[in-house]
Amino acid sequence: MRLRNGLFALLFLTTSLFSVGFDKTQHMQVSMALGYAGATLLDEYGSDSKTKKILYATGVSFAVGLGKEFYDQYDYGGFSEKDLVADLTGAVSGAVLSSYLDKKYFLIIERKKERKSAKIILGRKF
Image 1 (cartoon, one colour):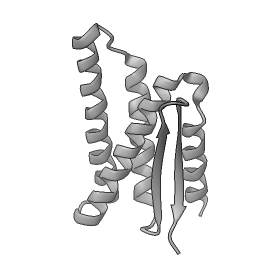
Image 2 (cartoon, one colour):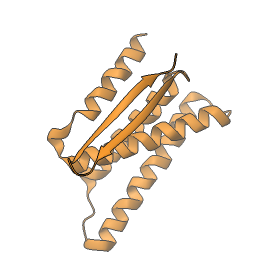
Image 3 (cartoon, rainbow, N blue to C red):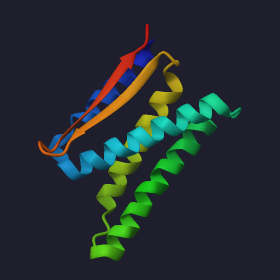
Image 4 (cartoon, helix red, strand yellow):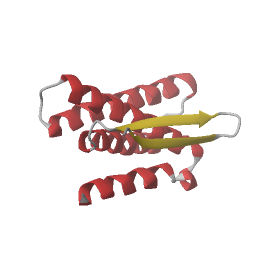
């Protein structure tokens, strides 16, 4: 129970970091969603340990963020190590959340482009 409460606190902390900038928050949220989805799929279809599932999901999610930074470097010379830190934070958070929550929980990410806002909703099926 203590771990679950800590993970919920981590989720809310990572989604309320708008002081670091909207771009970094977007990197974190997309990576969190990818890490969460990857760990959920590995949990559903894989037979590895929980630690390996977290590492695999984090690695795949981080690889997507790294690819995005290489694209930014090629496109306009804007490779950012700070974006990679946000990607890694989100990837680890999402993978850990997915691995330690049971299958009754789900995650929804909504982004409103016109208001430059995004929110993550964590729900529970009854």
